[in-house]
Amino acid sequence: MTISKLSHSMMTVTELEEFLRKPPAGFSVEALSSGYRIHSTDNKNMVLIDDFQSCMGNIVFQNSLGRKVKMHNLWEYTSIRKSLLSKTVYLLVSACKENLSTKNKSAAGEARVLKQFVVSIDGSCPLTKWQMEKGLDWTISSVAGESYRVDIDLTEELESWAAKNLTTDEMMQVKPMWKDAGFTLKYYSDALFDFPHWFGFSKRTFKLKLT
Image (cartoon, rainbow, N blue to C red; front, side):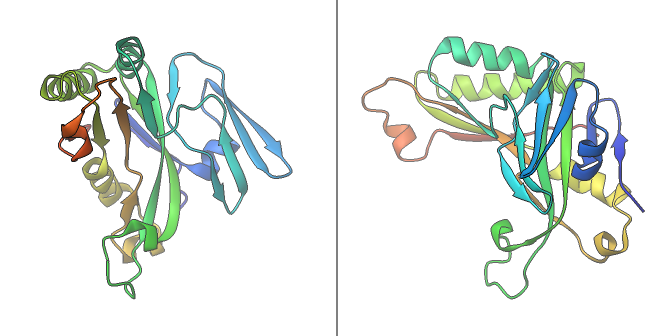
């Protein structure tokens, strides 16, 4: 069974190959000798995908902010926050099979990639927007005036989605591990002695519930 677009109002999951063959509205795909370049033609899209190498060559999403978004002042934070709460966010995630020969079975970096997907999240959806606002407000109030890092995690949502929708033989034989199932915001303050950040106390994580 070929997995294409399996979605509900808040999240859409699309096979990478399908995304390249039939890009959604607001995207165009340029085939190159080295791979593909994807252009976002709609300012309502917020792409958080790093350049990567696949079996189809080098894949580049033009104007992407990358999966780890860096901010250095309040204006940048306000701009990123506004985009997250009003645009459709695009991520690249990988369903992996863990390498049982490795001692660290939780290390996705040691796992074999079974399938890659482009995930989109509607940041303007009231439920998604409420969760995002709540998570960001909690992070900011917790580390006000300091550098911080916050991870927005979709692992549980993808596990739930996979249990219902991944029906190919290979996918059904294993419970896939999810790599890069989320994105990260990094804020760098100009505080001279930012001890909480140096010692790793300014890290936060919140999970989005979309199903």
